[in-house]
Length: 69
Image (tube, rainbow, N blue to C red; front, side, top):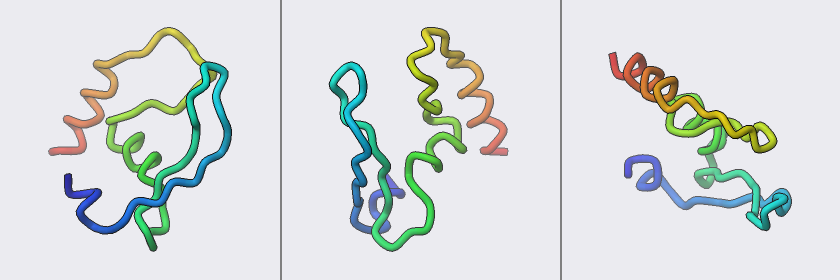
């Protein structure tokens, strides 16, 4: 993928979530912003909201489609 071919990925671990998953941020080495934020901004991921059960996949798809135009 073009994001990962730009450099090394650095993981900054924050904590363990309530289901035992490790939560943290991913950065390209030397980049100012996180990969997490970029994926959210481009419609490939959601912001963690505490485990809300309802997600709108069509909302993500429309965000990606509008970015591609």
